[in-house]
Image (cartoon, rainbow, N blue to C red; front, side, top):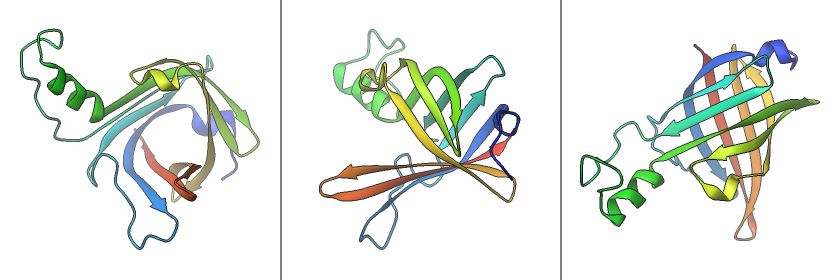
Length: 143
């Protein structure tokens, strides 16, 4: 299947997020093998993505503002959310991040290679880490 705007439009649920690390025999699973998530591509050019551990640690209080610092830090480490504009660039999708739980992502352009496998959307990105390469591979199923 070729990559077109129409092929991305809609909501997709996370099937798998793994990181393949050069030289490692086993991949890493950032939010566990049973991570959950949703990514939405709207015709207006906006997108939104959320990913998390399936079994998140409860906060130490009923309100995030009342929870202790350690509890808040744990909650952030188990969840990722961002939204922004999206465009296609060949066989890649570009997410221009306008809002994010992680402030490091604000204002960045996140480029993901796009492919389709058995009807699933696969987004991947390569990053340098510690002198090696890490390949993020996120598999999504149309909701």
